[in-house]
Amino acid sequence: MVTGASGGVGRYAVQLAARAGAHVVASAGSPARAEGLRELGAAEIVIGPENLEGRVYGVLDNVGGRQLTQAFYRLEDDGVVMAIGRAAREATVIDFELAGTRSARGRIENFNVTTPFGGDLAHLVGLLAAGDLDAQVGWRGPWDKAMEAADALLARRVAGKAVLDV
Image (cartoon, one colour):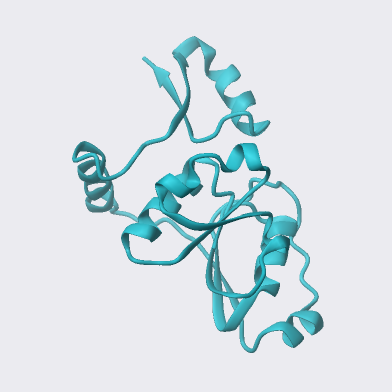
């Protein structure tokens, strides 16, 4: 499952997971924000992880907070949540007694960027250049509109990425 699947990182995660052969469950905040996720490779779409029927072995969590908690409760035995982002900007509170009744030995791992990552970026650029990865640009504008872009991203009015022209 990919939480925050409609955002810039989430849309890449859906595509890359599907390319790798995963059965991708995309979790979005609303049906409108979920538009286009099937075309990117999502096999299923849910509006929030709490609405997932069944369980998943892995979660790429871009949201944090309540959504990370709900995703954690839906793990298969020995499943893992990779905590990538904190878009919710809220604390994640997990009732481990409740979690223990849902799955055995589920875990959360933090995502950490290490360098060098030039090879990884080159691979992604190659996929983009070949048309095998869709950048999903949802907002584009001049450099002097950077604050407008940031506001739109933070208010979740952009599905995908914001691009500033320099």
